Image 1 (tube, rainbow, N blue to C red):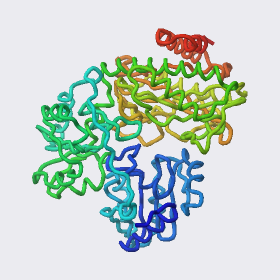
Image 2 (image 1 turned 60 degrees about the vertical axis):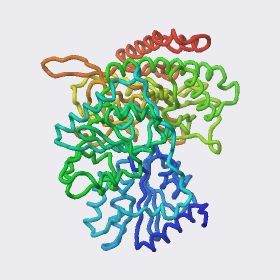
Image 3 (image 1 turned 90 degrees about the horizontal axis):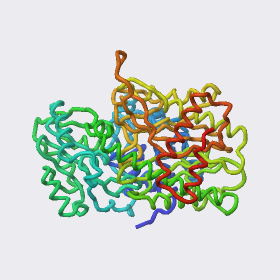
Length: 598
């Protein structure tokens, strides 16, 4: 068996397999059968074939061309990692771009065939792909895993044990959550409901795992009926106690590999509820033609996004612990910066260690981003042993980090002054801060579609002819995925599923990025809470959950109005009040200094 060590060798092997199968082009998305953001090694086919390690990207290979479509967050990284591979970087502005579909339609000829593994292609994405290809009479094969034919050393599926989310932290009982989902099934007249998204399954069953980096979830599918259900999973992950508890709530265990078989044998003429954005084409094809499919968002997706009062109380306490950890980290940083050698890699090590000392900490919630000066201008920069910066001299250090705690998930970005920041750096910092505050102070009617709020964060920058390429905010889970739907504050086209409701947790993170110079992003997590109900409607506002000082050394005070100064001083007073009982020594002194009013 030949080992394929280099990217050109792997591309050559793929092209040989394509010839043997009479395939003219192969599309490799960045996804798995659960459409996860972070993939287990087993499903990192696009990374294995291209060498590009970014979390998002679409690879297309023909006999004489290969292209990787990646958005602006990854352009510099992709150019470096694709060098010498024979793969061309195809630049797109956002991950939602469909330019790769246009390229396929323009490149392939009528009668030619495109292959994609339907088991990792989302149903909604498949519909868009099929529609575009059909218009040019291009055939689609989704029953062929070409990567599986050539990648003989593929990693095994993860096997970490599953554990219960402790009752004192879980918002409600498993039986109550199942009942709420079954009520939604009844309202849709569905006999069955199939769920593939891992965070939905973990939330619904009050279980957690460690199969996916940074997200406390486990590999499984779930099929619910009106009375019971089947969890498709490697049973070795569940101890006897958990299996008995699941059985008591009507959930039986079946092997993960038998998912399609069960779907193929559903009772004739029954009705099944599927979420087209959260299930793959391969699983949809497993359902017989005599089954009626009801398409709608997973009921659990909306239910879990609306945190219950018990959950939000735990989140508030978690934010205090996370803030205390950051105080210890920042106190350490200020004591050594420009005195001892510090690299971007040191930041990751020290900030994780500070969190690990706090009660309830489980793991980071994503890979820490620590970018000094020019590296801070890369929104998804990741320092490596081979490529990282020494933090010294003057400039700005951007740190985007977060933690998974038993009582919640955190995600925060702060920018620190190293030495003396320039007037231009202070201007950018202050404009970003104004965007963060402008959105944080918003009141809006309940059910406002979340993308409609995006402009509030951008407005202060737009006034100076400045903008940023990424979204302004994403939903955040409860000891679950750091990126959670359905709401998103961005320039994406809004739809009814994105309505803002009480209890949702969302990030606010505008930014300014000067390529080759510096980057600024200031991020807090906020909670939708009731504002006022009157003759004009039922209004919501944001409660800022994140508790950590904002570096006032980076502020150009002349750019702030009285309302903004009041917001900042009130925020720092609240940070001091909540964190002071949890810190001591150098961390306490740093907190007192960092929260002084301006």
